[in-house]
Image 1 (cartoon, one colour):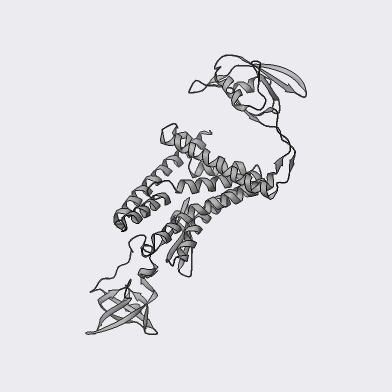
Image 2: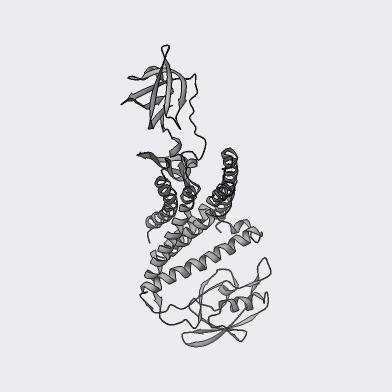
Length: 427
């Protein structure tokens, strides 16, 4: 596969799994009547931006996720106070634009000092215009213009906090939910592309051999059948092979192999790793079996089984992370994920489909963890609100999410820096 294709597919994988997540938030927020100010892929400086309707769609520099900015989630940035001089444009007896600066340059407007203003409930503005108070109704989609930027006002019924707990929870949960749906669809597509093996493998083959490890120093070749180790038949039991080798650091073991139908023996001495476990540098594989197309039932049930298996594997990884059973090199950020994705892309679209499904499943599960700034934490706050029957102080909740986001970004910087160093070292 050409490098341009590999790069394109790698970028496409990230774009798809992040976009489908954010689209879930976006769709159910819009369905609840919430004003969505921005739909963003990535964080940091904007690379591309276009506004369609009420929402600005942006592509940002750092490919570490995305976000949907809903009105009312955070305190509104622009605030107009009584005593402030502004200019307004009126159409059909309602204010459609409020100008907060460069007032002398505005034409066809009414200029005055704000006496009273309510852009959330009453949608009304009273101005002191040349000594006389004039009141105006405000269009619910009126724009506030300042420093060259337009910001649509958000009446209370268009804000995130005005919706029911159920509506807000659905808008938050919809992101991970879309990742789960995408993962299931992609696993089903993978099964359709890969097919169902006819028969059951009955042997284990030598796969990739690591250069410099004991296996590369003896007469072993890729495709050799691993028949027995120290007289113990292996069959297809990979764990049995690993256990025997692992218990024999610096102790020669006899490996019976079959090559081209002929039995042979090699003596190989496992080297201890950092934990003292014997390793020889073999990645074993099962033989390629004839395959047939999967039925609809096999596709559906198979996708469900893959979802279950991979979910268990992901939580086992979280368990190791929580209990400290890992090293920094075991963690990977966007750089390592992109590296692995590009490697899998070179294996073909079938394997890339399975990998994309796994990434989508991981993103959905990770976002439901009760970590501040993630969807799981926001759902917990909504759950507490439902129990208390009154919302938590928005400022306190925002501070919790801000601190959580800062810590996640710090961790992302650390693992990305480590990934880059690893690439530089050629590991």
